[in-house]
Image 1 (cartoon, rainbow, N blue to C red):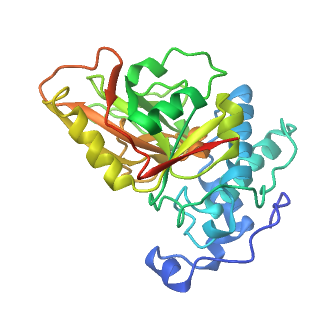
Image 2 (image 1 turned 180 degrees about the vertical axis):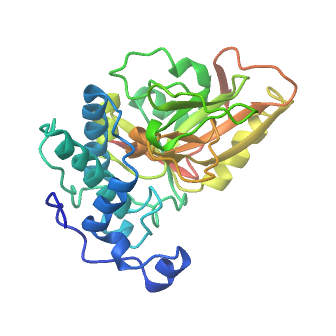
Image 3 (image 1 turned 45 degrees about the horizontal axis):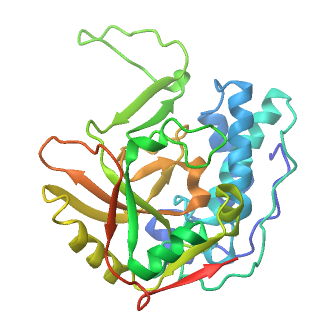
Amino acid sequence: MQKIQSLELPKQLPTPGALKSWNQNEHDYEPEFWEFQYKIYRYLKNVADDKLNERYRDLHRNFCILVRPERHVIPINSFLSSWYWYRKEHQTRYEFFLRNRPLPLLLPCPRGNFTAPIRPGGPNSCDILFRYGNSHFMKSFLESGEIRISPASVYKDGPLSDPRTDDELNIHRYLPRQHTRITTKEGKEIPIIGDFHEMYSIPMDYYTLCMSTDFEPQIFEEFGYDSCVIIKDPDQFAARLEASTRHLLSNWYFHHNPVEYFDPREPYRNQYLDPVMCKDFRFAYQMEYRFIWHPHDGTSAKDYIIVRIGSLEDICELYIR
């Protein structure tokens, strides 16, 4: 029997074929089943009250931004799905109920439609990219292709209030103490105090250029930006960027992908976490797309690099709020 009231759920489920591909049925999308799952695997039980509040605030923001009709058809396992955020919100709120604690915020609701100059074909379609910034720099980006790429480590020590602050060289996840067992080689069990903390690291600093896969008004507000460059041909842009940095970073591997977001408190079985391309889901509303230069020979990114790849006016346009 369901213990807490659910939010108003979408009327639309993923297609029968999509459900079958994940060995799911309609019950996987019911709040009563989410509570049953959580009782079996109470992954937030040992989280401190203040951290639980932070988690709910992050979920609240992500929910309001990422729950959209085009995401209702994506299966619940993916962070791209509206259902993913409904389930995370419900189970986190259920933990507040079990502790008899009030929520730090009012219940979230989907934001609904908003004005956008252009939208991509779908979530993570990557047919359009957005580079946010201040208009002075974005005009240079558009007209001369002047781009600053940064060592990933520069984002680590910023103020906590800055949405860019993150340790880009290490990612963390936690396994609940009550569901984790550690033994010595001889089979002797080692007592666990608190949740088990895993860290995945990359030893060398790398260069990165960050963009977004969708237009998001909240990014202007949180980052204090007033404009963005809309990249209408990401493949052509990537080719020019790679060619322009090849002589500067001749021994570096260049690649680009959308970021994958994960819940550090509820890891999937055998989930592969890449410190370069995976991030804590508290940043999911940023819908980040990354261009990466990774060293081959043991060197490390040291300082900012300015590249000029030439006018981008044939494949980009400038949007100013």
